[in-house]
Picture 1 (tube, rainbow, N blue to C red):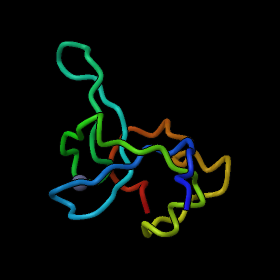
Picture 2: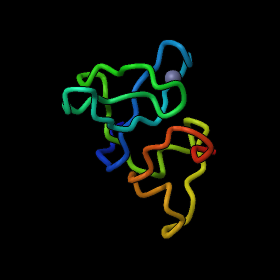
Picture 3: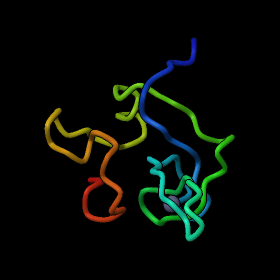
Picture 4: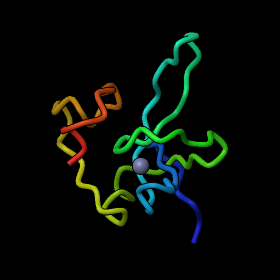
Length: 83
Ligand SMILES: [Zn+2]
């Protein structure tokens, strides 16, 4: 099977023990840092895989329909939105 190349960044998270959605935050110096969307653990950028939204079903995620807001990647709250 070929690896799908999509627009959703996922990576393995040690504290969560699974593949998780990731988001980007700015640290105190203004540098961008990628973190787990669930526990905010730092994610190695080299470990990020870009998958298609359809692949998230296999990871246990259900993506909200377009227009829902949190599925667009612009939600950086890290809580309450990654159902
Ligand atoms: Zn995590």
